[in-house]
Image (cartoon, rainbow, N blue to C red; front, side):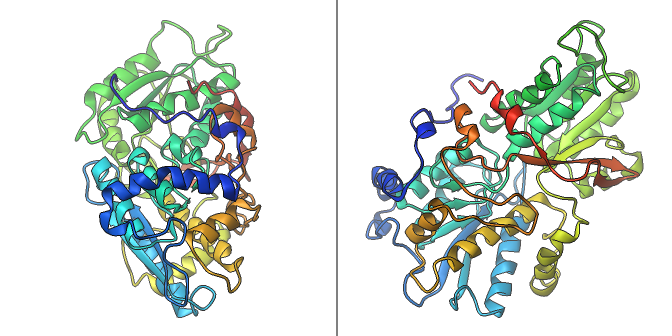
Length: 451
């Protein structure tokens, strides 16, 4: 755990709204970073890249593919389908949308390479992407003034950078919402999460929800994000939550609500299914426990592959950012998939990565449309978003608007503008809504210990 590079300080950013003059200052300060690695691209003027004139509007979408850890191939695949669909309808403001894609390989080198490609290609935005390596790609985007719209919310830096425009509350909101729900239903709670920089941020968020419900903090169980089995971690988590020492309730009253015992919360991304295989084999040696997790670590495919109605997820709570996939508010996205994805099996409408990419491109499209016939550049897109543009997403999120004066700036998340989550449950092997509507966890997050 030692020797890791932590998220950059946000002390000054907490008190500043990124006006165009402030954003320009950030770009100028970072320009040398991009130019140091982009000798061929230093002729580009930061903020005046790809999209001016009558040529195509260039954007990029990246995500890891084919790695031993978390993979999100549906995100760039959907982005390409979205471009085909938009262009078939006449483009954006009459101009072709050109989507470039990149595989960041779940590595800092790969993420930096993708960012350099975006700068060199003159992209006006990076849209609907996933990467755990924000410290590797954000300096290049900030140096060139390229906005990062709709990242997956997997790193804290996505909620601090003045050029980041997240559309959901990321892992902080999901875990805070889950912890708040589990506080009444569980005795002891164990969080099984990746032993990574991104994973280091997760316990504080789950604990914020637990403590809001008068519960002790969760046991923090570290695991390799690319392991092929997790028997040791499953045993350790089960021992912790079935132990008779200690109590789950902060007031010392023991079990609360309807819960019968401990809860295990795996948050291992694509490796959550692998963990559950080990967990299912180990749990027979322990008293009954419950499981809960967050979307992104489990989806319908994972539930199916781990036994459906007989899986260890049956009855589990799952927090998500958006309505369930069967909700009619997703119909416009499904129309794009049916018309332009050409049976691409990587694109699953129930995948939160695909859903996030759809919302991110909705934001980008409305930002471009707000410019009318004006130039579409990284600077004008950023300016539109910074100048108070309100963007509706058809009810999939609250109306989005980014300011540095929002409530969560006080805990170092000035760009976290959507702290709404949905609560789902696995019922007869299917994900279903456990509560109607959204749950706002802004107040819960305000009390998170993020130091």
